[in-house]
Image 1 (cartoon, rainbow, N blue to C red):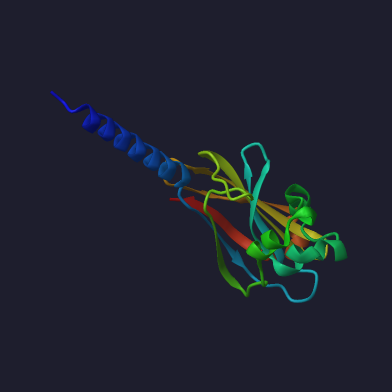
Image 2: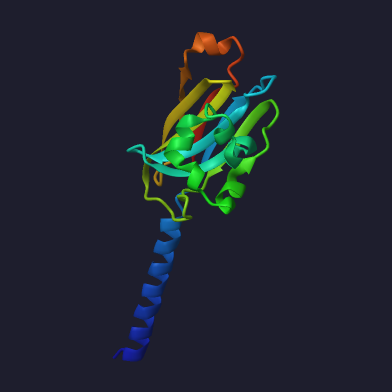
Length: 188
């Protein structure tokens, strides 16, 4: 006959292993990599951008990167600075630690890469599903672009290409330069 203590110990060990594996699986959503090309524009009131994630219903999840001027209250000095991001992220009420974690100097011309680990602004893992990645950028003064794309996380590897909405319109904005192009994301 079987020893009851060994059976109980074996079942307890199996349960522990299953719990540990489910925790790893739940937290291991994978990684979303967002890339875009940035071409710096000369002058002031330009080159500001924010990259963030929303759920499929458009609810704010997390800011991944934002230029230092905008992150540290530049939108108070110049209200045309990233108005969509400022509103959806409620950035004026974010902690200094959160600001410091995502703010960056305005980079030079080149390809920029930003990654999302599948966590929200509280550090909790989000469920598998479709998410919206967004980039808003100030091209010059109140001329802006808002890039938006959808990426699925938690299942198979996939990729997507974002689309742009220019304010007031692409032709007017292009007179100064487009600042950000070729926005895409991949999940692995």
